[in-house]
Image (tube, rainbow, N blue to C red; front, side):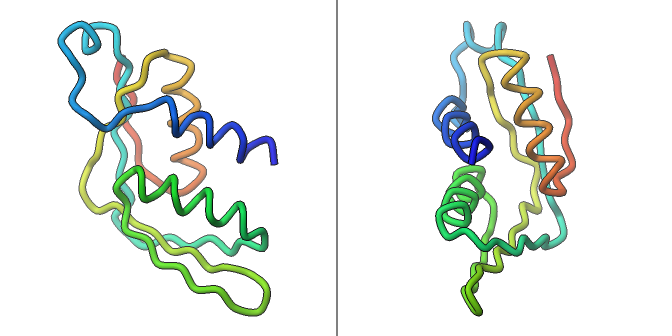
Amino acid sequence: MFRLVLLSLMVAGFSLATPSAAEVSAAETVNYRCKEWKAKHIHDKKAADTIEKTLKTLKCETQRHAHNGHDDLKYRCVEWKTLQLKTHDEAHKWEKWLKEYGFETQHKH
């Protein structure tokens, strides 16, 4: 549950928008992609909702199928995308989360 709360807070704190010149100089970036479809087997509907929302916010393709008391959530992100983050710590948290979900990442300072 803690991870979901952290994830929700993290989703609210990043931007996929183009940053201003001042933000670029201080920003941390994490590039990511997931060329092949990955799948998660999730038994908690609220967790599945949060993860799906996060993946969509990250501009990933998603497919979700509920059956037998759980959700199968498939996702991919073929093209490289970039997260602009405010701190080095946030960038490392996102990089860790993305890697846990099978994404390739590049973290730039």
